Image (cartoon, rainbow over all chains, first blue to last red; front, side, top):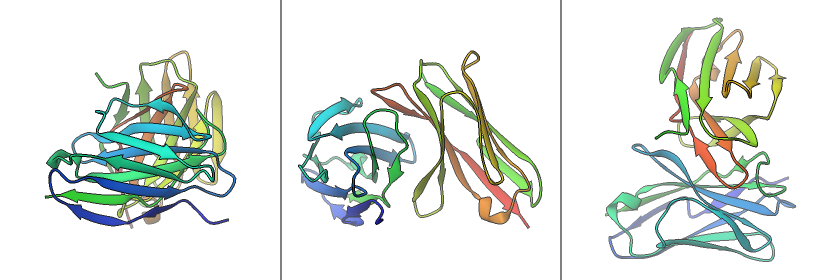
Amino acid sequence: KAGVTQTPRYLIKTRGQQVTLSCSPISGHRSVSWYQQTPGQGLQFLFEYFSETQRNKGNFPGRFSGRQFSNSRSEMNVSTLELGDSALYLCASSLLAGNNEQFFGPGTRLTVL
Amino acid sequence: KNEVEQSPQNLTAQEGEFITINCSYSVGISALHWLQQHPGGGIVSLFMLSSGKKKHGRLIATINIQEKHSSLHITASHPRDSAVYICAVSTGNQFYFGTGTSLTVIP
C-alpha cells in the first residue's frame, strides 16, 4: 500500500501571498489531519477532516483553512502569508476519526520571505 | 501552559545502553502516542496506547493513567535509534504534543 503523499515537498512564497498544500491519504483511510511544525512551537494540531467534514480544529487563525474531497484527499490553504507561517506542514491519515494511529506524510516545507 | 511535558530534552547514550524517556500530561486523554522523527522530518508512529504496556522489538511503552505519565524504553540501544522522540496525547478532538527528546546513540 502506498503511504501518505504530500505535494509540493518544498515551497517558497512571499508575505501576503496564499498557498495551497495537498495531501493524499493511504488508500482506505478516511481521516486526514494537518499539523504545523516550527522550531519555536514544535508540533501543533491544525485540523482534522473526516468524510469531507472538518471534525476538529486547533488554535490557529482563520487564515488557515482546509477541505477534504470525496476520495479523502485533502488540501489546506493559508491566505495572507506571514513570515511566521514558515514551517514544515505535515498531514497524517488514519482509518477512523479521533484517536486512531496516525500515518504521517513526508511534509511540505514552506518558506515565507 | 504545556499540556504535555517530556524529559529529558536531550539524551546521549552509548550503544547497548537502556534508555528511558518520560512523558507527563495534564489533560484527560483518549490515547497517548509515541512518535519518532528522523532528520529530514519524516514521522513514524511507534505506539498508540490507552492503558498498560506495549512492546515492539526493543521498544517498550508504558502508561499510568492515574498518574498521567508514560515512559518509552529502548533496550540495547543502537546508533540507528538516534532520532527525536515525541510524546503526543489525543483527547478525542485535539492533539497535544511534547517538545520532543533528541536521542543520540554513540557507537
